[in-house]
Amino acid sequence: MNTIPDDTAPRALTSRGEARRERLLEAATQSLLEHGYAQTSIQSIVRQAGGSAATAYQLFGNKEGLLVAVLEHELNDMRATVFPDTMLDQPVGPALHELSRRLLNYSLLPKSAALYRLIVSESHRLPHLAESLRLAVEVQLHAPLEQCLKRACDRGELRIDDPRQAARTLGNLIDGIASHARLTGGRAEGPNEEHLATCRYGVDTLLRAFRA
Image: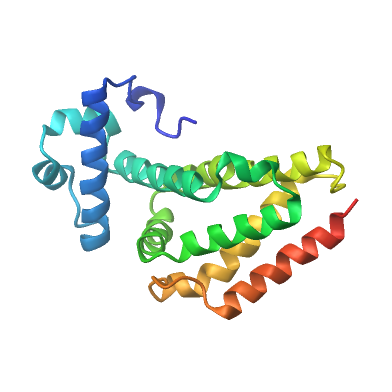
């Protein structure tokens, strides 16, 4: 997925270049969460991470491109944590419950909640950021949920007329469960029993609706 304009999209990086990019993203994430978007500059990030401002501009284009890269990096990490490949081939009932619990738990982590609030607060001023968020969520969240549902249909466990919409429905349900806790700082200890009960109920409702 390419959410940075073509004229600023990064070229393939060497291992050293990738390590440099990773350091810049880590420094950017820390600065954005501590100081906010308006008070963060590429120059301050470079001072913290090392390297040159020219390299940072080459990699990310501008400060908005850097924020988009931070968002995509976070969602890449979310997908790796929530959607292990082996889970997609498990029986659909246990798999969906486990995936949903993992996703809810990740969404409530204080760092994830803080990034969520940052993205929401800046999206109305940065239209490209809002579109990048939509595309990244589609690829990193809805697509693996859709894949899980399609495999269940292929195994004869479910019968779904529109797996993509079903995946979006489940993703939006979990996003809604997490929304209030995100606004108040997240939960380092994980979801509470009310969150988990609502999550289980939603998954069970989906399974009943589409059971073959």
